[in-house]
Length: 252
Image (cartoon, rainbow, N blue to C red; front, side):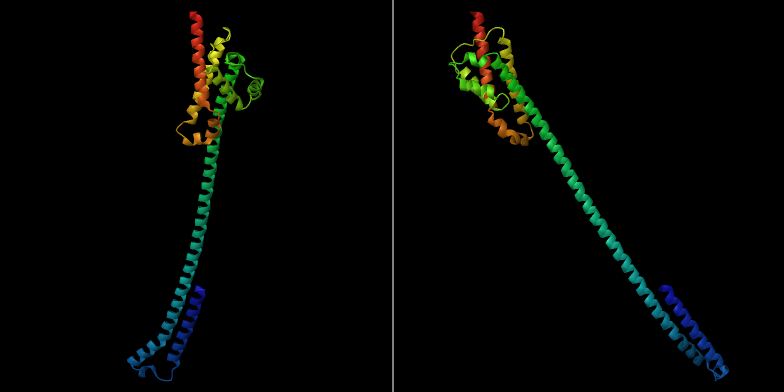
């Protein structure tokens, strides 16, 4: 459109100049009789339309340039808006990925801690079972243990109820006035099992009361219900009674 306007203006200008020259050459009035001021006025009047024409063409060209610039700015703004939207989507995607990774890391940490705690619970269960197999619970109580209590103890070997049952038997053992009557061959095994029980509980308490407060709140319900501190205290008391009983036996 720009070149078309220029060609059109040039054509009109050329045609006008030809007309003016023809008028001057073919005019009826002799040129030598024309006064200079009149000739100047004639030239000024002749070129005024040309000047006006090119002024109009310049305005039109400038208007077209401004329209093109506005269009380019609009396209640039649309491109920037698109880039901004893409950037926003990228940031949201990265935030989601970060959240997923953090969630996976948190889940992995929780699973690791739970695995460690379950491992210590299994060690505690095996240690208490070793005490039972050595005859600690069922030979030293102050009174005979009923069949129901025996069944409850052995029936729950694979559950947390086994630890609670062991706690009841340890408590009954420590409340007894009788001296421990474990055979000499099994005496080291009982002591070792009691010590391992105490160590397992200490490790569990260390994990639960670490600097990460969420660990205790996460597992407090289950491990609080096991009354592990009571189990540890009763195991220590049983170990002390057993050691004292052995000393009295040796001295006698």
